[in-house]
Image 1: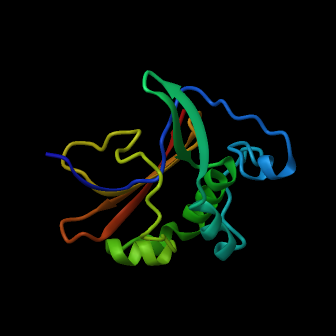
Image 2: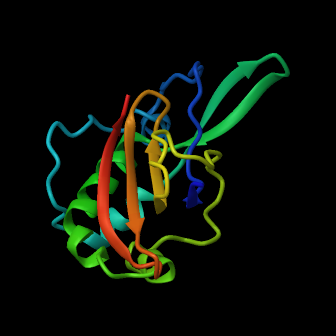
Length: 160
C-alpha cells in the first residue's frame, strides 16, 4: 500500500496558448527565464524560497472550452532546484510541518492543480512530494519518510 502526502502545486497541460507581447507578459509567463543547465545550491535562500512557490496562469482548451491552469514558471523550477540542493542535508530528520516551515511553504498556496506525483513512489514508500512543473519539464522532489514520519532521504527526479 502506498502512503504519501502531496503538496499540490502544478498542473501539466498539452497546449500553451498565451503569447508574450510585453515585458509584463514575459515576467508572468512560463518561460520567464532560461532553464538552469546545472544544479547548484542557492546563494540567496530567502529569495529562492519565495520564488519557488510562484505560479502563473496557463490557458488551454479542452472539450469543455477554455481552461485556466496554474503552473510553475521556469524561474520557480530553477529556484526549487537551488533551494533543495542547499537545504537537502537540513531536511533530514524533519517532520512534515518542520519541512514546510524550512521551505517557507505557504499553506494557503494551493492553486496549483497537481495532487499526485509525476513519478510514482515505490511500494511501501511514504513521502512528502513536491512537484515543480511548467507543463513541459520540471523537478519532482520526494522527501522519503521513515516509520516515525521523519525525512530520511531527499530524492530528485527530472520531469520530462
